Amino acid sequence: MPRETRRLNVPDFVEPILAFLRTHEGWVIPIVFALAFGESLAFVSLLIPATVILWGIGVMVGASGIAFLPIWFAAALGAALGDWLSYWLGYHYHEPISRMWPLNKHPDLLPRGHAAFQKWGWAGVFFGRFLGPLRAAVPLVAGACQMPQWSFQLANWLSASAWATWTLGAGAFGVEALQKWF
Image (cartoon, rainbow, N blue to C red; front, side, top):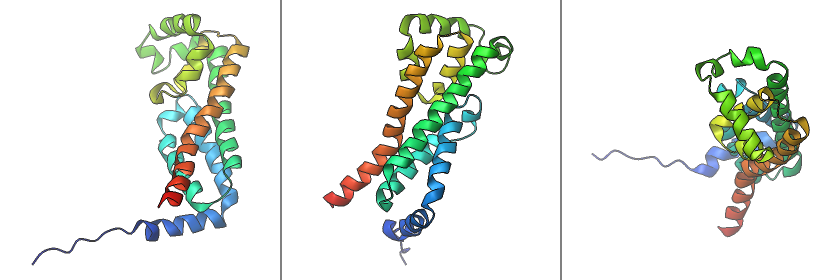
């Protein structure tokens, strides 16, 4: 006798999550802020798969119809403040941090980072935000290499805004487009 296959009805599976988001909309903003902050904070980012969770939240935001702008702002603010703290730690504690894992396993990393920041400047910080494994390390190394604060902050805030748009917007606006299309 053939085994009956069960299809997962996505709307039935997703509807309770969407209802929860609509009911507890006030929690979405601090959760998104905390995830973006943790994703951008050196060392902590290794423990939290926040980008994937934020992609999912973006999809849920688009499907639920809750306001995108406050959630986007929370993600951008969390990401920028996480990078700012990582930069500050690197800037003020560059000697002890250079002896910590994973930098102590790669003694050439700081000199190479310094050379990269000399060559690319703020663009290295901006594009580093979009390279998953380097996302939280770039600000720490920028601080440890004593990159000028103004150029770091320019790249930090601009890239945090672009990253939040990309991370949340792809799901949120993609779902809206699919709902209209189908």
